[in-house]
Length: 247
Figure 1 (spheres, one colour):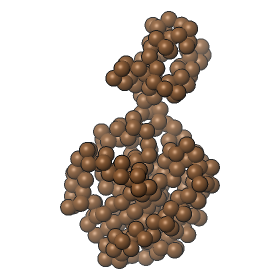
Figure 2: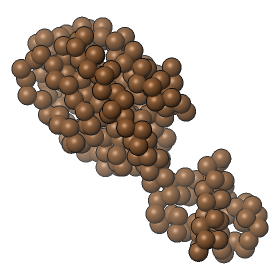
Figure 3: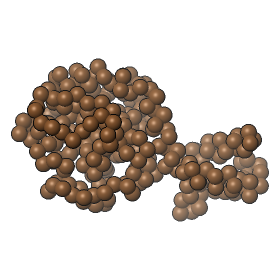
Figure 4: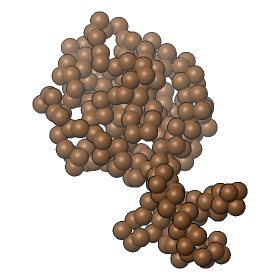
């Protein structure tokens, strides 16, 4: 059992470098292809590896999901709290903190703004994936296998005029988010609420989480909301640096 576990770990280490064929992995381990195939089939059953169109093995979505969940061990909420309180005080708007958990993005902290408006968001609940800025900010920066696994579960039931209604359009939006460095929700779930969001990036550029600033359309125009992007960027950079991530 221990030997098999050692071989499985070596396989994952090799596949992490680049997609590998069964033959190459067999040569690396110096064991018969049938032995390697059995190990790969077990890893595949658990979603740790998957095969591409050239029948090479690469890391699977479950591997990435576990990695992102492990990042929560850094106690992101505790680290982010003073920064988010300051952002909330300076903007007087609702501030959210969210992370990726499996195939969902979940709110893990919230600081209410001065507006007396009931919002959908609740700590511990999944975000509305097709519209939420924090979801877009995170998904724009995850590896494609993770993104695609999440996209397969999103339902695009447009409820407002600005709602995203297809996977194709959502992918285009994610590309825009990656280029711009921030995501938006322009009344895609509730027409009277909009937000801007940015990811918190780790040292290797992976999204540890995301922060958003939310306002009602009656209190802030979209231009007034985007004018707060420098404040949001400063907050996410500060949290990232505290976690040892990008400056």
